[in-house]
Image (cartoon, rainbow, N blue to C red; front, side, top):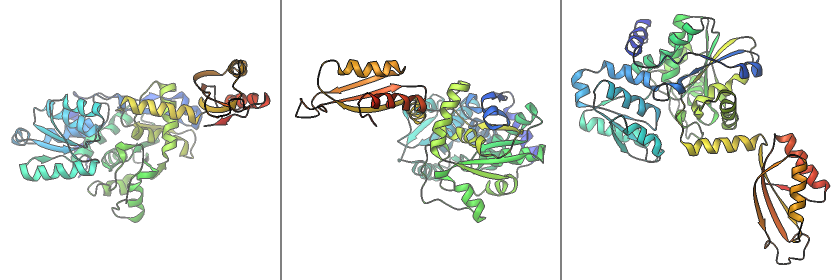
Length: 401
């Protein structure tokens, strides 16, 4: 069971190994929401995510012969690195099965801990099935990413740090995947401060825990569809589910588009890289319907590959109108490019890229014989619309891409 003594034991194991990531005040989100907002930045943890907590505590409990013979797990990222770190720290043999689609940077980061990595299948479920098969065949200790009370106890030690740093905490926002994190955090937080509110946050496209709570039993989704891959879980853990039922006050769901938006906020206002799963709690800040409360949003991790970061930045800028593309047809004659650029310059737009196609129309004498595609940087949607209006007033007909 998850008892106060078990959490204290987990904390004693972790105390001199991991970072106490403290709390970071957020004037930006406090002003936006009307609450006093702090972040628990587990994206700054040793392995870039909270998963190291449960992994270390779980491996510490294994008998020496179990560590020597070996353990196995399946993961697409954060749990893999947590187990890798724990195996190295406790001198245990470990095998980690990852989907073949896992970004190379995550595979290499996991291998760097000296563990054996196997790539199997296209999705986590494939990797999980293979890991269970190998566990049975080779008699390896299987360490589940979330459906394990030892893992949940390790993750829950976050609540000690939060309440120690801010005893006046009214509410903690926690991302939900399979349920191990929120089971541990909610159970310990309620033991330490019974009147505290624990709000879980899931992506709308993978809200398996909310569906299970609503139905009163573990319920599986037919499919999951979300950019928050770290919490894209079809079926919550049955072992941790009773603790979620007992201690979690509410679950909020968040659309992917909001994650893109808050990713940009976190980069620009806090200079932090937070992975999509960790952004769930940030996006939920605007959905609380309360004022003047001390709210802690848990940033569960920050392990992202550069391609994903680049994509999120571009989508975020486009959503806010700070980068946009338009196309316009114009005559093929000298001076037209100069005229267009002059209009844009007058309105203080900054051209990022130009594509000028003289062969879009067979009739080059046509007033629409040339196509110009312009990508540009603006101050936002209002500025973007001002530029488009100015072009229209000068006789052009810009079309947004």
